[in-house]
Image (cartoon, rainbow, N blue to C red):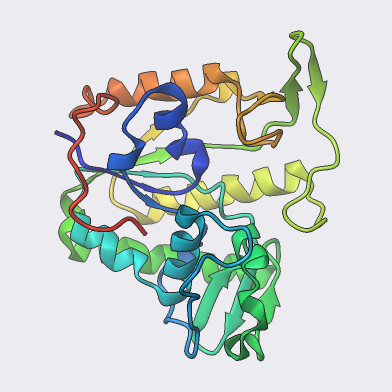
Amino acid sequence: MPRIAIVGSCITRDLWPIRGGGAEALLYVSRTSLPGLLSAPMTGFRPSDELPGDLHQHEHKALVADLRKTALGGLIAWRPTHIVFDFIDERFDLLSVGQTLAANSGEMVRSGYRTQPAFDAVRTVPRLSEACERLWLEAASEFAAVVRATPLARTQLILHGARWADRQRLPDGRIMPIENVEIIGGQGADIADYNALLDRQEAAFQALMPPMARIDAGAFRLADSEHRWGLSPFHYVPEYYDEVRRQLVAMPGLADAFSDRLAEPSAPAA
């Protein structure tokens, strides 16, 4: 049976809860960035014994993994047969303190952790800055070396080519533009800028990594105004997920990827 890991975002994870069961059997690494995945743990960070703010368990788990840097080791230990990458979570600014880089995700903001002394000297690296892009490219090269030097070298790599939708479908079927897009906390975003960033990231990643398959459902890239997680440029209509699922199931070893017979995890999800 396939052992599937996702290094990415809900656009790939949602293939299971939205279009078929089994999400609990996936290793899901999210709310991080390649530079953060490979950086040092945050010195002095202390996770709360109780869920901070309004975070859910899986959100807190992903945030703590990003700060303690446990996700990469967990990914290698999981020994997946397939890894699906998508870079939609590569939209958050990075937080830099000491040797640590972490995503300034919505979960980070909602957690209240930035009031801890460990964050006193933190500085922000804007996502669309040259500095952030340079950090990302360096991390992509390092990650490719990790893949080649570990059991991940035997894994089928899959890139989910994703972009932000600039149009939404309303309940009555009308297609309308998406306006007033935000990242977090009122931070505005230009869809074209972030799609251009994704173009560059995917091209660089494919050039650095071992050969990988690619899935792309761009023909169905519409936001769903009634999506279960709310309207967003990357919360798509059901047809999008159906097409990605169709392409995945057609790949070697993934015919049973959406059955409830997926292998149970033997390592904790990051």
